[in-house]
Amino acid sequence: MPEISLKMCSKLALKAGSIILESGGATNRVELMMYKVCKGFGFEEIESFVTPTGIFLSIGDGKNELSTSIRRVEQRRIDLGKITDLTRVVNTLYEDNCAKCPPEMTKYDYFRQELEKIDTQQPYPSFVTNLCGAATSGSFCLIFGGTGLEFALAMIVGFIVSASLKYISLLPVNNFLLNAIAASIIVILSKTMQLGFQSINLDTIIVGGIMILVPGLSITNAIRDTMSGDLVAGTARGVEALIITVGIVAGSGAMLKLWEIILG
Image (cartoon, rainbow, N blue to C red; front, side, top):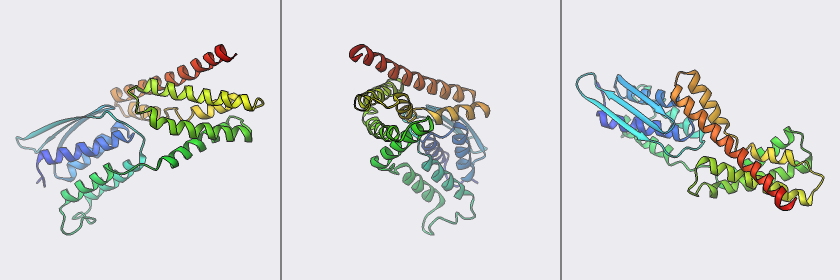
């Protein structure tokens, strides 16, 4: 016997699915979590279809009632912590009497409250993410054969680009232009540093900075979705990763050519 109404369950399942999709989760994980939410509240007839930009969910009570809902997902970012937290909360629905629920709260109230907490979680402070970007850029510079000086310069480039991405993303531009602008900034910074340190290898610094922009998770999810049979989602994610890659190449290549033309 379902514990809540169809519409209430549908809202919770869509909320859970959208959090995972917005946080960079694969589509099969979104479908699995929505299925587990509906089943945890007593609904057996569940059908879902997920794309990188939308969620379609249909729930039935086994009698005559059927609820179909759609939610569009426009913003996506990588936050694997939210995916982990949400998975943990969904699994509590299958514990006997919802062991983690306070005595004064129902399972529905507890789950809704936890969803709101996860959804409103603040990301790491900007300084921490910028520092991680600097470490990433510097580390890849070393991997590609950079020296100690080039490592330090690559870290500076990574820090500045990571900080710039926050403001570039506020512009009304798509992923192609966003990554093209970021790649251009990397080339400008690297070329400017070469004016003061002419002995450095420019390639290792540029490559180290560009690795921050490479859509690794999108490529991984595209492969996972395709291998699991979600061909539409896999193709869409693969095309998205390709567009981002082309944007990086176009931005860095164009700026290198412009620098050569203007400054020689």
